Structures are given as C-alpha cells and as structure tokens.
Length: 312
Image 1 (cartoon, rainbow, N blue to C red):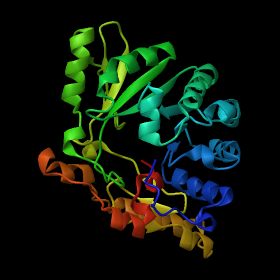
Image 2: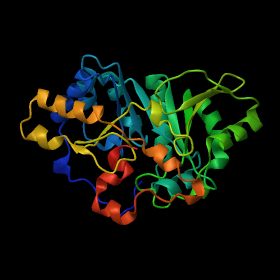
Image 3: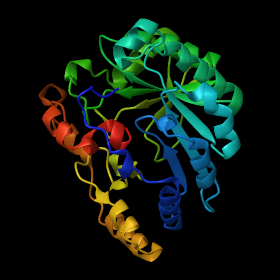
C-alpha cells in the first residue's frame, strides 16, 4: 500500500471502459498482442469483468492477464474467467498474517488466501509475486515455494526495487538473485535455468524435482535490452518505462476528438523514439550508493510517480 498522504487520481480523470476499449484497440492495431491489468488494485474498479469482456473481444489479442492483491479475487474469479481473462498473478509477500498486516496495513490475509484458492480452482494455475525484503520476509523463500506447489502456482521472487514510492527503500533490504538462488540451492540441491529466452521480466529456474520458479532481478541485473513493455495509467498517461518520470497524455487528445489515425500516429512516434533504459541507468550506481528514486515531496506533487498509479 502507498503511504496515507500520497495523492490519489481524481475519479473524473479515469478513462471510461469505452475509452479504454478504444485505446486498447489502437494499441492492438499497432501490434500489441498481450495486455495485463494491474495497478494499484484492478479489482477496485467497479464492474471489471465488463471491461475484461470488451478487451478479450479485441481481434489480435492473444493474452489477457491480471495482477491483483487477491483481496477481492474469490468474489470475482469466475466472472473474470467467463469474461475472457486468461491468467492471474497474485501478489503475496508473506504467509504470516502478522507480517501481512505490517506490509500492507490491512488485515486481509485470509481473504488473499481464499482468492488464491479460487484462482487455482477457476484458472487451474496461477503465479505468485513476492517482493523479497531482507530482514522482513527473506526467511520465507522455502515456505513460499512449498505453498506454491500446494496451489499449483509458480512463485516469482522480485528484488526490492527503488522506484516510485519506495520511500523507505534501503540497499540493505535488497536480497539479490544470487542470494535467493544460493539459499534455495542449500535446501533443495542444484538449481538449473529453465532454458528459455523471452521478453518476460522473470528468469525461470527449475528445482531438482522439476518445480519451476522465477526471479525478477531488475535491481541488480536489469533486463532493459529485452524489455518490450509499456504502461497506460488509469487516467491515460502512456509510459515507456517503470522508471520514467514523465508520460504522454493520451486522454487529452482522446477526449478532444482525435481520430484513431491521429492516436495511432501519436503512439507510433512515441514508441519508435524510445530510449528508456531506467533500470540500467540506476544499476550504474553501486547498491550502497543508491537511494529512493523519487522523494516523498515529489510524490505528493504528482501521483503519477507512484507505483500504484503507474502500474508496478
């Protein structure tokens, strides 16, 4: 959860389902064939299955996924699946209810576990995302792997990133990919790369018994060179990088009557001029020399610099 004093987006600024469907159609017409609904928390958007159904109907879209905190997932899993959602990722940083409250400031751990179970039943499989924090939850690597097995979920461990509102970020809290692999290997035995080359952020590995898990190591070993992702905020700002401090306003021309051709040209020009390599630039600093990417004062002035707005 973001800090209580952060600025939230005005409701009237949010793109309507009709606007989102139109913009997504334009992106798909330019070659985008994978979409992920994220946030923030996408299930806070009222009638989300309606939007999922509209997006799933887009010709040329081959993958529609969602990342959620899982609190409302048990209620909506079947409707989302019926509407056309194909895959679900649940953020789960701890298996301990007391730690969950500490990390999220919500007493909703049981609801998240219910959501995970519902996703397992409805979708057959899912992914679990865990941000590994040194001194906080790094003693749960093995329990999380075992829990993932029990619910047919692939666990993805994420290095703690110094982006957005990580105002309490410290290099001492970063548990690196190397450290994660060493700890798991000490328990399970030799770990092998899964052996695939994709643009996905997670590098996948295999335990001796065949269990697959992933690690997203963008703090210490960025993957900018193979990144093919961009982000559209709920109020229509187009970002090329999670580390970007400025986006391009799509909502303004959309509401001013721009044609699809005009919007296509705007998006094409922005993407073709892309030079963002934010994680690589941050990685030129040694971990001990790094500090939070954006100050709390800056976040108060511009909610778009926060991860819950940009889509972390």
